[in-house]
Amino acid sequence: MSGLSKAKAAWHKTFLVPGRAGRASVILAVVAPPAAAALLVLFRSDITNTALALVMVAVVLVVVAPGRRLAALVAGISAGLWFDFFLTRPYESFAISRSADIQTTVLLLVVAVGVGELAARDRQHRTDSTSGSEGLAAVQSVSELLAGGAAAKAVIDAVREALVPLLRLESCHFDPRRDPVSVPFIERPGYVSYAVYRWDAADQGLPPSPVTLPVRSGGLLLGRYVLEGPALPFPIDEHRLVTALVLADLAGLAILRSEPRQRAVPA
Image (cartoon, rainbow, N blue to C red):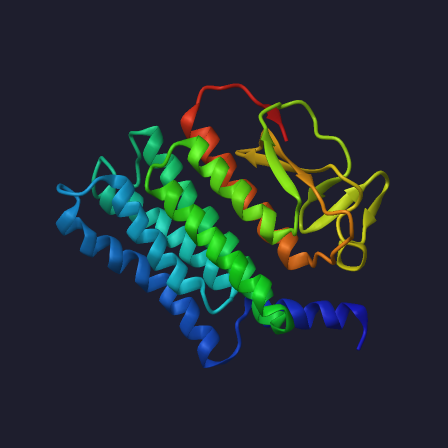
């Protein structure tokens, strides 16, 4: 099979979700968020928007758990739209009057796509089931903190604590500086950039410390995690690197929400 044919087959497998289970996951992604949001209308006058968002996050997590990227994207867009329509003022309108509600809507999309990506990779790499379950649990925990309105510092600390076992680090700390990051650093879609080439973390572990994990949101650089690895290298597969990037994105959302007018460096 040619390279083009393989790429086409992979695209079909990932996004066209063949089979009943795949089609069902996309249908559920379309139907579940508006149904949940409509049901929550009964409680919107008695429950804060952050609590309502937490329920929507839980619905999204259930939808994307099977690991279909298209379902994750659809669930994120659907959850964000219907959260806006039913649960933010002005009600029954796709307009949003408060910046906090805009950030919550963005959170739903980020969580859905991020967790969907992790679940899809976990489905493709069953041999590393431990890292997959750890990553999903960490992202879910941090997402719940963020949706619950936790302070930016609490989210930053939660991400830092999750990164240490995930990437097998000696230590990790958050650096709020917003000047351009230096190499080596973890970059999308899940590799380590080192000088002019990509470091093979799956074979050699992380490069010599420190390694930078940029924290970005809304196209802005909002800081970085500084990662100190162990003396002996441990293989770090792409799944763990993608998980780290998703966690950093959640920290970025928390920072951006806490200081919406703060100027930052374009990422």
